[in-house]
Length: 300
Image (cartoon, rainbow, N blue to C red; front, side, top):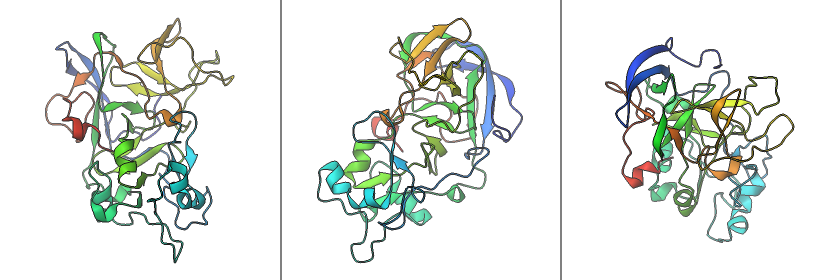
């Protein structure tokens, strides 16, 4: 089901243990933090006259529906869009957009407590900023285990291109620093801790798995259940979802449906038990790791 070259090593089955203490068997999936099959971007426009082909996308202010294009005009009218005249993510003399053009700027801006000198920036980072040995390890239960109590974690799961499906971006902190943590049109962006990761799904990883018109598969949650797109082949949204955005059918069993692109989430919670990593992690944030303190849990 995964894109060719999504993994840096041949996936294997290993012993693992869930956070609840259940011993089970998992798929061990190791990736390099880059989406297989495509180059990320673009993210930030360079001038206030650039169109949608030069920039990426961002959550719309309604918090639902499709992402909005980050055009030069969008940057120009951020103060009007958010009702705050302090926005100034461009140089009024040159009409050039302020963006994080170096690794140092990326490190200073792509975190919850944005350094002052990197405020009023469109944030973009490059894969070249990652450590040479950067890797991520995902442990996915072979057979999902229904949890006694639903749970949440920073890492939601893994997309079919081998990259992270991340939990909510800290939008209030991002906007509070007068920054835009730009996505590409696929709903993902890059930081040096997670590599490329998604905060929204726009169809870039979708893969049809059946002929019954069901919504396409996007990836797998950390508890082993499949995450499918919001809409089916007829453009109809999934209905009768539980609090985790899941439902059951005869073909797929229990599975999730991703939220709309601007909702800043994929699922509502984990229906199943998630797995703690065994031994030293291959990456900084493997699925099922113990929760971080509240402030760090909001990293983007």
